[in-house]
Image (cartoon, rainbow, N blue to C red; front, top):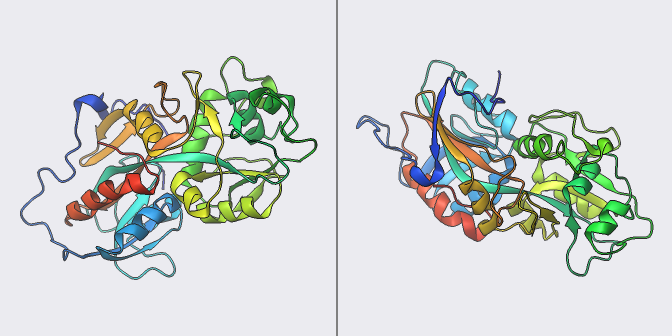
Length: 341
């Protein structure tokens, strides 16, 4: 199954500014929709980035959710086959990588995709052996080098320059990456593929490892499954740094680096800075009932967190998820997510 990769499918889509459009989550739904019980929304699977959000919704709604990763969740949704451990039937999925619109549900059932919340993919790290009293800062040259495998020690001169002096004498960097098919990898690799090819990034740090839910990581990196698995591996390894969504990072109590954005500002991840990035994007409608947000790989706002994206909620078009989606959007900022229109 081919999932969405090309941000420029202009022949399928029409786009409008975020400031000019409010997404009608269920506008035009037929009166014949199947109305799920007010507190029951069935069973879903997909991205681990929404674990904290969906856990917070369980006080209001009855449902099960398997954090199988974006790729596995989409496969389950389109095949209408629950992943192991998930009850049947599947009624929804979540992915940080929007679908192309050409995918078909087994049996021909229609489906809807809407941006649910904004997610920030943080570079969380293990503080052991590091001296970062004001918070770790990472320029684009530095985090491109770390994630490309060309910067291997915390005493590297690029990291020292970012932080006004050396932060470690000799602490090898251990990068933790997702081992499963992950929307977090998609958001991160899309960003790296944009910013790690710009002036000021040394040749050794230029990104050439692809874009997708899986990419070609250096063999020395530590693989872990799910955002929680990445966070646990970071905690367990001195010198570790890895990418994990902000809500999971907060749950695991890990610090995150301040990253240099396009405007030249070191920005901490927060609901406000993620939302600022989302506002720089462009809403695109395509297919029959599909919406995504483009142009998020390098947001231009001075207050934008640079590695941000939306997570997408998919459900069958004969079901009504308006109450669930509304509640999710309202809860999101308190858990570390950004807002979408």
